[in-house]
Image (cartoon, rainbow over the protein chains, first blue to last red):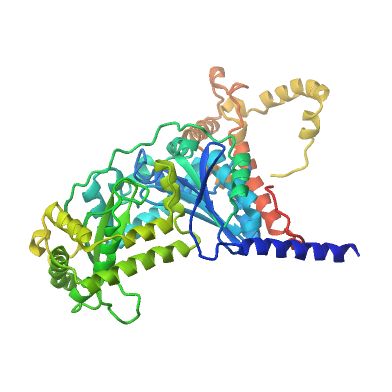
Length: 451
Length: 132
C-alpha cells in the first residue's frame, strides 16, 4: 500500500537523521568550525540533539551606535514588517514550525537569531537574510510598537538601582564607546534620536556583510554554508557608514546617584578582554571566582572571600563578575541591599580585595581555579553558549571563541598573576558608583579606594 | 470599504478607459468638492475603525494640511460661498493620500483573519520545509 511504504520510508528517514544528530564526539568537544559563505564569516558546531540555534551577530551594539537609542531600536525592530511579508506572518510561521525567535543587544553586539528543529534551517536562514536586508522601517510601526517598548525599558531601568549602578560604573570606566548606557537612561533617545529614518540608516550600516557573522549551534556546517550562500547573496556589501569605535581606554572615577527605592554600590576595575582580543588575562576569571559572593549551594553563603567578608549582612546580594569585551574588560563587585548593610560591609569588601594583593591561601586559589573552569565549561554546554562571543570575535579579530582553549588557559593561571592584577587595580583609579540613599552610602575614599 | 464596483473591470480594459476618462473628468469637476478646496480623500467617512487607524498613521504634514482644507471648506459652507477659481483643487493635486493606508490596514486585517482560520496538517515526512 502506498501509505504504508511511505510511512516506513518516513520513519527510516527520521531514524537516520536522529542517528546523524547523535554522532557528536564522545569527548564533548566544543570547537567551532570556521568558514566563509557569500562574503560573510560563518562558524558552527554540530552538537547532538534535535534542536539547532543560529544567530546573526552584528557589530552594532551601544558601543558603535551613531546616536543614542539606535541599537536598542534596531533590536526591537527585528522581525517586524519586511518587504515580502508582515510581522504577523513571520511570527505565526515561526510558531507553527515550533521555533522561537531571539533578539538581544549588548554593549558591543546586536544578536538576532532563532532556535528551531534542525530540519528547518533553510527557513530560518532565509528569515534572517530578510530581516537584515529587507525590513521596511515605517514610522507608524515605530509609534505603535517600538517606542512604547523602549519607554517601558526606560522605566524598568530607572526602577532598578543595580542596573543603574552597573551602567554608571561602565561609563565612569570607559567614558564613550563601552560606556554608553545599554538601556535608555532618559527620554532623549526616543524623543530626539530614534526615528524610522535614522533607524533605516543605522540598519544599512549595521547589517552590511563586513560587519556581521553567522554562528550556528547544532547545525551542519556544510548545510549552513549552502543556505547562507543562497540567501545572503544579495545583502549589502559595505556599510553606509563604517561603524568604528576607538580603542577602549580605562579612566575611572566616582559617581553618586540619589534614588528613593533600593540601594546599590558597585566597585569596578580594569579586567581582561575577550579571549579573541588583544589583552586577554585568564586571571580575571579566576579572580572573579576567588572573590565570589554568590554560592551555588542553597541556603549557604558559601566560602568565597567576599561571602566571608559580608557574613554579618546575610540579606545583601554581593557578586563579582568579570565582564569581557573585545578590547577591554571590567571586573565588577556589585553590592545590592539595604543602605545600612552596604555601609557596614563595603569597607570589609575593599579589605578583602587588598588582602588578595598580599596573600592568597593555596586552598582558596585551587577552589577558585576549579570554579572558574567549571563555570566556563558549563556555559559551553548551553545551546546559546558563545554565539555572541564567537560572532563578535569573528567580525573583529577573525577568531571564534573556542571554549576548550579558554578552559585550558585557566589551568595556566598562577597566584602571582592574580596578585599582580589586583595590585595594578588598586594603584590605578577605581570606578565606584553608589545609587540610593546617599546619606548612608559611603564615598570611595571612606572605604579605602583611590578615585 | 468593500462595496460592489465596476472600477477594476474598466481599468483592465484600455478601450473602456478611453471612453470613461472624459466622463469621469467631467463628473469630478462637477461634484463640487474641488470648488471648496477639498480632495477626494477628505470626503471618506471617518466613522470606521480602519479609517481612524489610518488617520493616526498619516504623516504630520498631511494631517495638518487635511485639517486646514476641512476648516476652509467648512467656513465656505457657513458663508454659502465657493472659493475663488484660483484656489480650487486642480486635478493633479487631487491625489489619494488616505486610500493606500486604508487598503494596507484592510489587508493586514484580512491576513490576520486568514491566518486564524487556517487548517494545519501534520507533517508526514522528514523533508525540509523550505521558505514560503
